Amino acid sequence: MARMATHVITGAGSGIGAAVARRLHARGDELVLHARDAARAKQLAAQFPGSGTLVGDLADPDKLSWAFSHQSLPDRVDSLLHIAGVVDLGPVGDLTPKSWRHQLNVNLISPAELTRHFLPQLRLSKGHVIFVNSGAGLSAHADWSAYAASKHGLKALADSLRQEEHGNGVRVTSVYPGRTASAMQVKVHQQEGKPYDAARWIDPESVATTIVMALDLPRDAEINDLTVRPGR
Image (cartoon, rainbow, N blue to C red; front, side, top):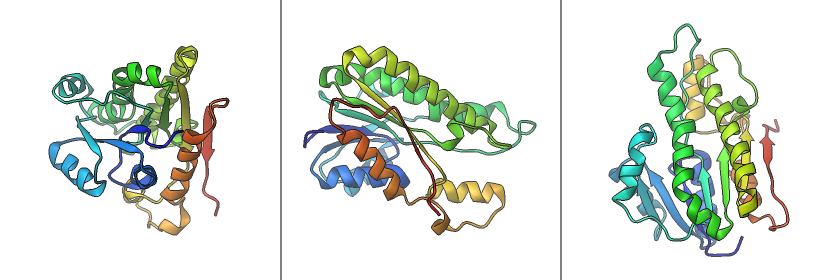
């Protein structure tokens, strides 16, 4: 991808999202960083000087359109990177509709809504949509039903979008990281009642490397699905 490309990124505040944002910011690309509220947007703008911000609560996808209508959206978008996510473990017998809805809203419906908003710009630039999925998007285990369902749905969204937009030159990639050393992983271990050892899991920088590689791939090729597993 050419230098000074413009990337819209969710989840840039920590983990994989922050690692990707640092890489793209360091090489001089333009960033538009999504934040759930104005205070978070201010933090991100300070963390990545010169970047734009976009405020909207992914937990409430019905209001994203209204929120964006009151902000200036970038004229050009070369990539849309869906990296934000939430997880709430529990057996089917215990998970409430509130927990299901929260994970589906943040992990699936809001990415669909953001994609809808930016498709006109992505078609113009023949851009790239990257969905950071999860190993749970490929197989579901005990206590992971709601999260895995949201991520299985995200795979379906990506696969449909890829077929719909191929003729428009829009590339679509799903990345399926295994367990990654991040704040989310700390929460998962707390919910599992297990001690957390970051050294056992993938460094977010390694996942960022795969995402930037997919972005920079020459136009004659497209990575559809990329699985990244812990190497130790």
